[in-house]
Every structure is written in C-alpha cells, then in structure tokens.
Amino acid sequence: MGPRGFNDPEAENCFGDGLGNEAQYRSSTSRRFRFALTGFHGRSRRVMVRAREEIDRVVFESGLVRIGAFRCHPEHPSFQDSGPAENYCFVFPRTAVEIQHEHEPAFVANSNVVTFYNVGQVYWRNPISPEGDRCDWFGLEPGLVRDALRGFDSGVDDRPDRLFRFSRGWSDARSYLLQRRLFILVTTSKTVNPLAIDETVIDLLDRVIRRSCTSRFSSSQPEIGRRQRHTVHEIETLLSQRAEDRLTLSRIAREVGFSEYHVCRLFRRVTGIKLHQYQLRLRMREALTDVVESGRSLTEIALNAGFSSHSHFTDVFRHEFNATPSSVRADCPRDTLPSNFLIARPTGVRIRVLR
Image (cartoon, rainbow, N blue to C red):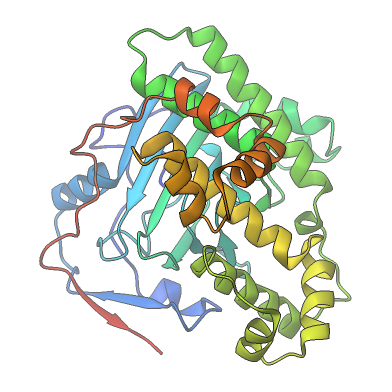
C-alpha cells in the first residue's frame, strides 16, 4: 500500500524519503518471510521517485476521495518500506502480505481483511504471496474520516493525528465486491460521475468502519498471550499461502506445533471465525479475481478453485457475493489498468533471505 498525499499532486514531492531501511524492519515478528534488501544505499532522489511511480498509481481523484492501485513485486527496492502513508485511507489487499505498523505486532493482510492507515503512518511489509503486494486503496479527506468515526468512537476528536485506532478489520464479501466494481468502473469508463464515486467511497468507508469496530480484531483480548497470537499469525500465513490447497487440520497443527483441538479453538477464539470459513473466503476472492480479470471459462475457474462442478461454484459464489459469476463478469471489463503498469521483476536487485 502506497497512497499519495492530497496536498502534493506533483510526483516529485509526494513520495517519502529513501527506499528500504533494513534497520527499521528488524523488529518484524515473522522470521520465515523476512527479507533484507541490499545494494540501494546512496540512490538519488530522482531514482527513488521513479521507483515509487512504478508501483503506485492514482486512478481517480475528486478532492474529497482518492482511489489508487499499488502493485509491488517482492524484489522491488521499495517493497519493504515504501514510505509513510500520506493519506487517511483504507485498503483492500488482493494478495497476501505481512504488514507491520510502527510499535505494533505484524499481521497478515490478505483479501479477507481491510487495512487502515493514518496520515504519516510508518509501516513495513514482508512477502507472503510470490506476487508481492497488490492492493487497491481509498484515500480520504480527514473530515470524512472524523465524521464517519464519530458514530462508533466518541474519542475520535481527541486524536487529531490518529483517527483510526485499528489497523485492520474483516472485509465482508459484498463490500469486497463493491470496491472491485468501483475500481473497475473508474479504470475502464471514459466518463464517470464524480458525485456517484464520492458517495460510493463514503458508503464503503461506513461499511468497513462498522465492520472493524465490531470485529474481533479491534479488541485487544488481553487474556490471549503473545505466543497464542503468534500461532494464529502463522496459521493465517499458511492459509494465505495455500488457499487453493486442501490443507488438513493435522497438517496445520503439525506446522504450528499445537494439537488439532487447540488449533481449532485458538483460531476461532482470536479471529471469531472457523478455519474452513477463513480459507473458503480466500478461495472465493481469488476466484472473483479470475472471473473479472481472466478469459478462462467459468467451469475452469470453478475446478481451479477446488469445486467439483460449475453449478456448485455458482451456488457458493452467489451465497458469498449475492451475485452469480456470469453476472459479475458481464458487468466488469477485464482490462482495468494499462499493460505497462507493473509488474515486471526489477533488474539488478539483490535479495538475501534471513532465516
């Protein structure tokens, strides 16, 4: 996620300083996916700006809201640290990535969640998906965020620099589909109605705030220890890496070093949902991407997603998104961004993996 600021429209002025900062990221809690980038010290400001321009693009702006696309390969020099957030924004991840906000534990950001950033938020990322970080973000004028939060957070006016108290919440299926349709509209339509776009983004803001303020993620749950939270983090990572696989409970338990019974109980206690529900949601969102972005037949998509038949896939898809795959495909043109917008593997980049 790399949203640009509202007050600095010129590319030369709207990006943070520096590329990756290895020292800043050493506090990450996940060793398995920790990357350290080398060979980028001393780059010029112009090179830094160019690197950021390659991975971040604003696709709509009205003055109140801004919609952008962030696409970054794990080997890109700005992958670890793309600079602090320059908008108040909420983000819908399309691939799995580990995010760590400054002074907070790392968490798994995937298509099951929506993530939140305050202006100036310092954060770092680690790869989980081999595709890196692919997400769509919605930047907001601070007054919109403050007004939306007042109904859920009576103390929001006491925190002018930290309106969002939470870093993530659940992304329900219909909000996920709505933002995908909105993103496709603004990237494919030659004429859009700015009033309708603004209203839809505000509707999305209300949805994600309501969901996040009532989700299990927003509660600190002090009775749950650090080791237990780390175990759930590892389980989410496993499920994110292998959403298409038929992971067994025994395999998950073996990977994290807990019994099958405790894995089930712990995951539901921390997240509020069951393991199979979490995995099914990931599979359906991946299938949605195939429906709107690929030319494959719906039968092929159904089989690739692990369903026994097209009809079974359609039933689950309709239950999840309140729409059929064919109707969603008909509403969504496939070419949503110029072909030169990412994401080639950068050349001349050296990476070492820390284990």
